[in-house]
Length: 78
Image 1 (cartoon, rainbow, N blue to C red):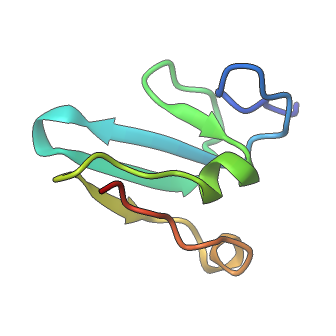
Image 2 (image 1 turned 45 degrees about the vertical axis):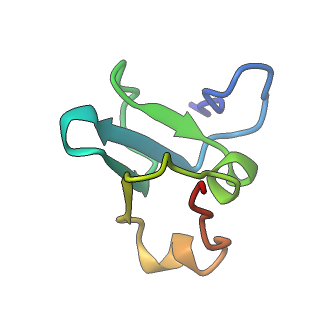
């Protein structure tokens, strides 16, 4: 079953899963998880490529090499 991007108003197919830990100011990008998790967000290619994290936060991209071949480097806020 195809999963839709979690961003409001976006009908594109999700390709990555974003999760975070607020206490550590850390964001993770992973390949799309097998099941939807209410504590994470599924993102399409466009929203993954445009992702930026708040100042002082760290982004860890843990996607497979195959996914990274098509990705655009994420931007950091600030």
